Figure 1 (cartoon, helix red, strand yellow):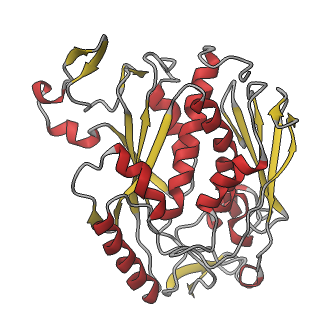
Figure 2: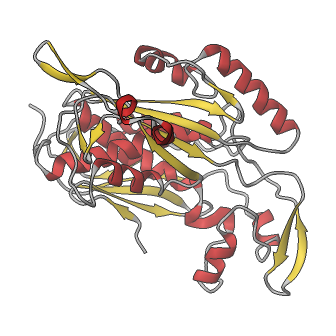
Length: 364
């Protein structure tokens, strides 16, 4: 089992969906970084359940910072953070313990752990554990900010509704988190809201696409061959529940281009080497090239839906109809935006700490 991610900057998750707490331990954070519970809470509030168009589960997600700081600054030791699970109702899961939900890890976890897995809300397979990723990401974002690195993330597609034009960085920064669906295009945001309202009424769900941009990265971050920038980010992103696809830069569209179209030509501006286009998504040979790092993530539809679905009783091996009850998001992509942002922060921080682009001590 592996509940930790990263080498020199490492985030370890703990807890279960219906357990007492979920949380994270961060190792490798530089000493001297200003850090308070408020810094972490600010990021947690972006993914907190019980908001518009998301699950009805009401969790305050109030973080407790238990170790790793003194007088408001990190001390170089492990940083332990957790939030309590307060609004838990396991009754439906107790009743349907042996009937796996389609689209979830219930069946595979039952086989792997010989029935000893935590079946309540998916246990540690639940998206509830992404709260720990956001806690670790809050620290990573603060570290990256000391180097002027900024991460912008927004929804560019929900169902068949797509953002058709390139949204400027300023628009993403200003509008993404003010939109109930985390979309920086106000017109498309309204259409997405209407679509999710319709799906919720039909007890159904849909998927989405999230775009992430990382600005102001220095050239040369990444450790070829197996820890290239794409490799580490892909590993981290695919560890997030419901992620099914990722593409960098122009992604699959590159497969239909000619080399003369796909290659990003170089030029000099104010003493910096830039590229005229960014089809490579800011990465060449697994290393950052100084252009914005851009990738998109495909999120599958929420598996828990109110429509009847076919399943099997694992005790009798007979087919059963299952209607999932409870409180679930009509589109997971909406709440995945800060999780993608946080995991990206963790990946980049780890790669930069490894080569001492981020020192062991920061601050005054």
